[in-house]
Length: 144
Image (cartoon, rainbow, N blue to C red; front, side, top):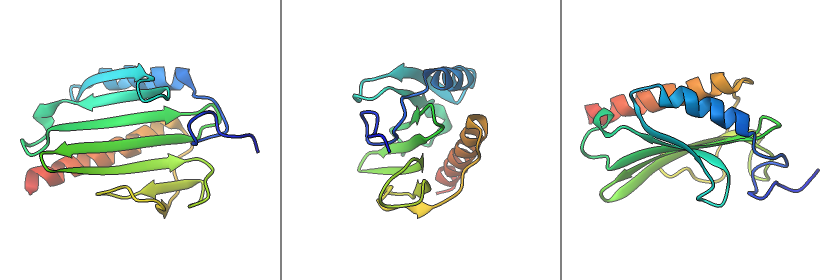
């Protein structure tokens, strides 16, 4: 197997057209304040900041970062910043020593190892699954 492409996540390069597609789709929603393809973290990824009116005041910021690879591996990381804590989880599909290729790092700390899982094969279906789970989380926050 080839070594990872610079970020330890996959032996393949980032699929920029997929990131651009996801960026366009997310920018078209009112829930998203910003969707930018960036390499600020040292890795090319889609950075999404959710619009604050969708969250109660107990959430300072909510973000999603997406890395999608040309072999359809991915890392999708959701994070909420609260005044005194961080709540996060991650959906992953990539080779690793700690789980099966498809796995989920559960909230609130996204620990490694995560839980073995199974994800859809199409990037649009994966995004829908993630956004549905984020929506469930937002609903939970409003009921706390």
